[in-house]
Amino acid sequence: MADTEIVETAIEAAANAAVASPEIRNLAISLGIALILGAVLLSKFSLMLRDDSGRPDSPYSFARTQLLWWTVVIGLAFVYFFGKHGVMPPINATCLALLGIGAGTTAVAKIIDERQRTEAAQDGVAAPAAAAKSAWFLEDILSDEKGVSVHRFQALFFNASYGLAYLAQVARESKLPEYEPETWSLLGLSSAGYLGLKALENKTPATPPGQSDELIDTAAPSARPPTVG
Figure 1 (cartoon, rainbow, N blue to C red):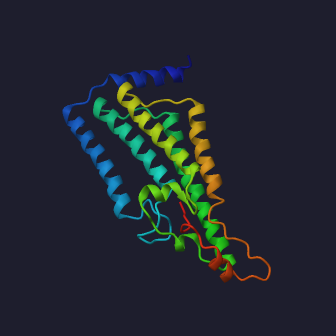
Figure 2: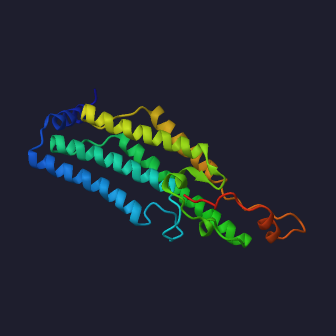
Figure 3: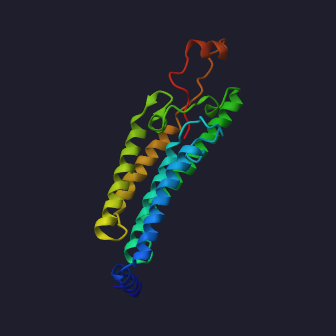
């Protein structure tokens, strides 16, 4: 075993052996409640999870919801460990990877939205965000312009399942879980599938020769307002 591994093991053992005082436990409980309430209230009464249109009735974004979910999950794991041992847990590659997948998904989704807005402006039509309105939270994050989509449902299922399993493992083993690369790959592929198909959403139909955009819009109205996020 390398010297660095021995040091890391010793640090982890010392952290796990420590016991927090009642004051620290109460502080951790308060921090956990504040984290959950803050996430819920900001999601409801701010534009934190909504698209970039700036309207209060704009749809909720799946990518931003995924990033907030993993932020809350890992934040609660840290708070739980702190409340039990009085120190912060050693950071491992798994928590960094999970946060990285959420942040990367949000960044790429924003790039896709900006590209679609630019293409819409070049075609002289309204940007997707201009017409999209929120239905309700789950419908927003699970739906594209055609309704509920399987790739969004799949991504939601895997993220929710692994997030709950992550917290359960923290509570059971009192340490941050370490997942195998295959687990990261599953979540990464799920997010990649969401982003790949998101790039195909809200496409502006090409105008056939001799036919105006107005005729197309009249003859083939969208089944659901375009979505972003």
